[in-house]
Length: 120
Image (cartoon, rainbow, N blue to C red; front, side, top):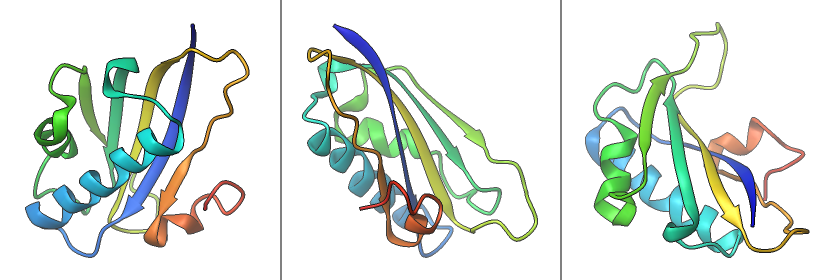
């Protein structure tokens, strides 16, 4: 087993509980599927949100879709002038059975602008 970190992000359309939840519920399964890992392979998950997202904790939505046994934490991004707004970022730490396991980082919706080199 090898521990790896996977990054991802999604831009949501509004600062609402529903939009934050929808973003997390789209992003997290996409990360698992693209990397062929299960929730049981996860070690921990760090969520960050831009300072304009205050309606809810992204981790709360992750718990709703089966991440309840995974250590989760949320933090606020630095308020950099001109930075992309309404973005939820994630760093997933996971065990990979394959030593040569290729990591697929997931950037969705407007967040593709953050890492054009990695975005789908």
